[in-house]
Image (cartoon, rainbow, N blue to C red):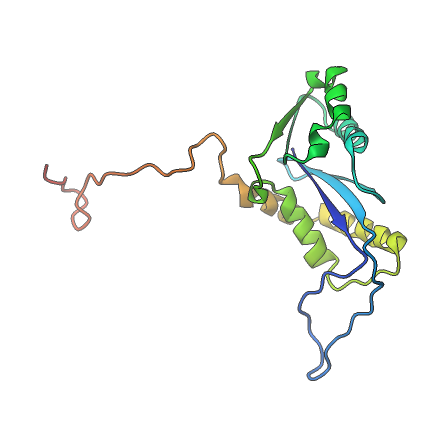
Length: 196
């Protein structure tokens, strides 16, 4: 399972849209920097688990989410996430030491590498497709709209799987440098070996 956090603001993610010629659409939005914080986990089979808070996530809230994952997913669980300080916080270490490590293994992605985390695609889709050009009056309305967007997204398995397959071709165990291939046959005549 891949896990990541993001923030959602009442300010709209403005994207191109249709409008009558000569009439530029105007979005009236409340100017605020108060965010909703969200944490989500995406399983290999395309299951999305998500929690929303009205303040930034810290170590204790990450532990609450990890407990939620362990309740929802039976058996051993591998969580792959970035190197955010909240992932290495003392409450997370204490949670693992208290017995969660028996079922839960945490792996950190390499330094800034959002292209390796399919959960980044989830945030992009929610912000730029589901919530595009949406102006919310306050955080309560944003929370409602975000909840509805997540429900819609959970039914779009092709989008969830697409986020995974976008990253699936990257294997962390394989060296990043492509091996040098020596030609073994003449390109003009594939069945003829090259002369030594």
